[in-house]
Image (cartoon, rainbow, N blue to C red):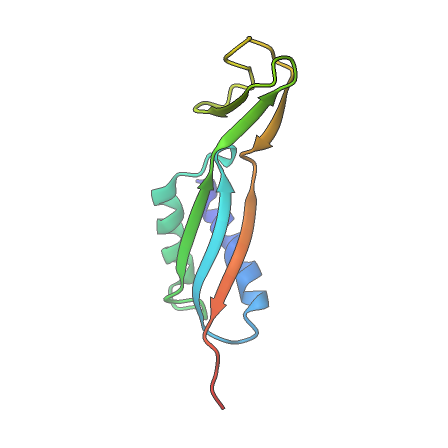
Length: 114
């Protein structure tokens, strides 16, 4: 279950950048080729943040499809399976456009009022 280790990496990074303020929401982009199971990711997040400074923070995931461009015919294809082959001309000379992302795109913190 690599979702647990992914969530640990997210939580560690968010904690470092939270500057001691409570975090309400964390937005991440995760590519299809990372093979993340959405329910497992959310379960792991809740498990990891319970009774920590991130407790109550919502994890919002933008799942990015795997997209390739064929160098032979120029076709751009969204992959359903991780087979790096152009479905239009069967060429294996393709460029990966998206699908390997693993990025924290925003951290929404509560701003303390003095």
